[in-house]
Image (cartoon, rainbow, N blue to C red; front, side, top):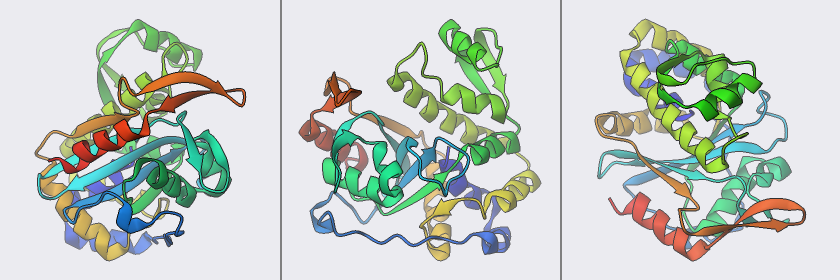
Length: 292
């Protein structure tokens, strides 16, 4: 969902962007030194931003991260690659021991989440952005809502429990308030289906943004610019937008971690968790993000 915040500048142009960006204030990102940065997978042609959605509207409060998607902008291949990190993975959190990945954000926020992903999966993260549900809703409504290509009976049953009543079928329209409940469906389905749904909605928002009149995009950008917690400096944000623009003509590639066949269910400390083959997943991440 957060990817759209970085696509906006590339769609509205530099003159308008310069005006809007005055409301944006980046936060500092100080590498903790927990992980030797030189040992991590990286490339000069790839910029990695960890996009974090938190499970409440107040992004300043200590809370578990509901979604963690690494957006990789590959200038060489002109592609955007989205890697979802499942929140129930049983990982080592620096200073706290082994527990679920999404606990890192609750303990010490985004920086500890970054340290944890870097430590366990060996990939360098250059920046992060974090939003609450309110901004996601505003984004979807700002582009006029989204149309989901296919809605099945299981999804409809789960949505009904949240007060959203839809009929199964094709090309089903969602407002922002309905879409946030759609991407968070977990009852009746696995967390793997939930994260796949999140990645699908990202592409729907981007496609809808391309059809949205410029004046509406500008108003949307002005509204959300001051609400995003992000570490990308103002000058670098425009450079990132220029890198993203040619990527919009190509398909967005997607990957979940842990990948199929590299994990198993388990119970640890009374928690249902995913036990992960870290070496296999490091190889998969390397090939996916840096393999072209």
